[in-house]
Image 1 (cartoon, rainbow, N blue to C red):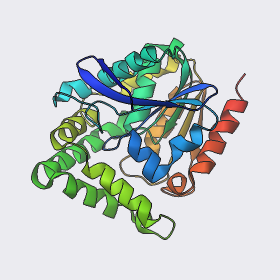
Image 2: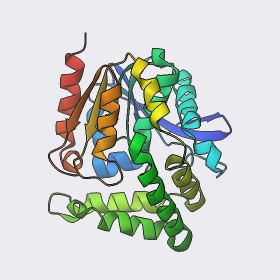
Image 3: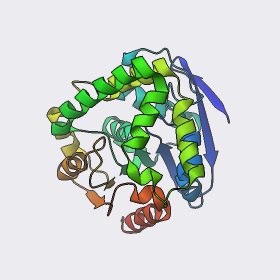
Length: 272
């Protein structure tokens, strides 16, 4: 996996596939390797796109200093901007899940010329949901402090019963557990505090999105407490060219990623 030394970090990334250019940004506590092993979405996307994936700062094999400020949304977006320039990707489909989705959206907000369109899967909490998620983030940080990654991994796995259903193979569950367990504790504590911090993605930030003239596909789950559907609905309400899809149940697209790709393909085909 190639690396780029920039902005004080050593960042791991990968390029695969051919076709229109796309970036996929992973979520908090994960990395680019985990999205391949437990979900498989990048493999599906690489069939039709020239796909850039990477480990965000402090995640997977990418380094960090461990301070809260380096995980600010502007910093994560600037990392992405630098990586795109390095691989000569001037304009692309900016896509991501959770933390990765807001990273992609932040880059599009600051540099709309770099986004052909946006594909945001279960974006992090915004607007009126931020304060509640901030409280959850503080609790998770405390759990990390006392029980490490093992405690948080066990909690998140237990809080999502669909992950232990017959639809999710033990191999995929083990891959997800291993992905979370290999993350560095102090980096994950700093990232948790920053991503769920106050202030952040508040009402004034939402107002800025009203001028973002870029097609956006939003995908939410009906009852995810960490990625509220109401946050996706708030984004849908302010983004002028957005479409919102709500999954029939939680983790539906985790179990059926090919359906998610079909939604993206239909969205892309409908663009001018």
